[in-house]
Length: 124
Image (cartoon, rainbow, N blue to C red; front, side, top):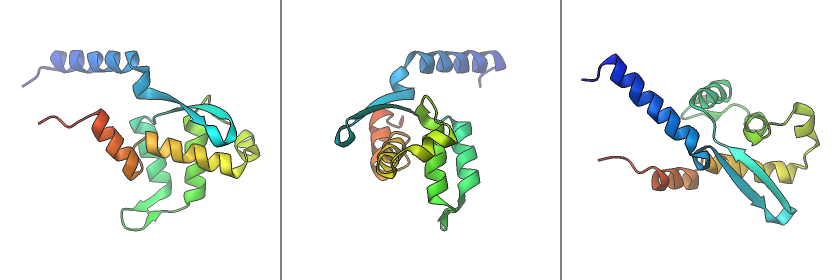
């Protein structure tokens, strides 16, 4: 059993490791059909919990307002984040393309979940 000091040391080293691995937190994405390059990032556990609590009803019912949830995800997870006004000015097809990239990178799609398992295989 770990002592409190060992647990804090383990957590700090995990935090230090994560801070050193920019590729785990951010990704540059080319939206070739639009001639754009954007930087997206992964949601923190707290952000994911907040977004899911705000927009998801339950596992069976799904999302309360998928358009609002998609907008929230784009605003928060694009680097740098967008304001409400900037988001409203985006062409919808560009917003949709960014949203798909964000959902995949965060593991919120079947493809994204599979990529996360490949990147972070479960330990036996």
